[in-house]
Amino acid sequence: MEREERYMQLAIAEAKKAENMQEVPIGAVVVLNGEVVAAAHNRRETDQNAVAHAELLAIEEACKKLGTWRLEGAELYVTLEPCPMCSGAIILSRIQKVVYGASDPKAGCAGTLMNLLEDERFNHQSEVISGVLGEQCSRLLSDFFRKIREKRRKS
Image 1: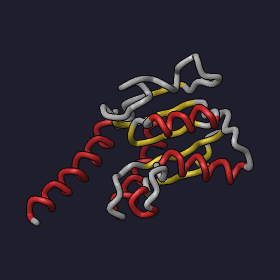
Image 2: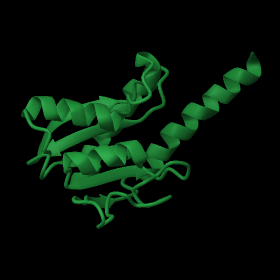
Image 3: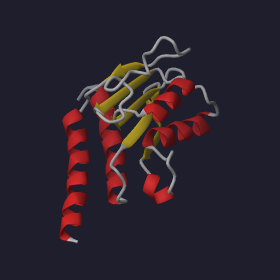
Image 4: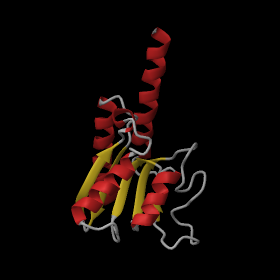
């Protein structure tokens, strides 16, 4: 298995933790020098916090662990394309590379709606690799929302 897929599997494991908590199944890991320094999953419903996205939680954990807000050289693996808020945090924390699985046609800011991460108008850009284990990541999300719709129909 190639490097990106191995780390994306860890992000998928985080997404499954979110799903088990009835959260939208999104997971993220931060890797620096080949070592996972942070891992997180979506917790918006659990925390009742609009900014409890997997990426932000993983970035926060990495900053605490490393003792710096500058995550230069770090890579972020996330199951869903980052939204505008998460893309902003990625830029500001200076993450070098973002690898994501599923594209987000409604909020994706790493190439789908726009590409904030590679926009040279910002003082920092991140390399973007899309579609890594994309089908598996997409299926996690579509299955989750299908189950919610089925539950609503039965109620």
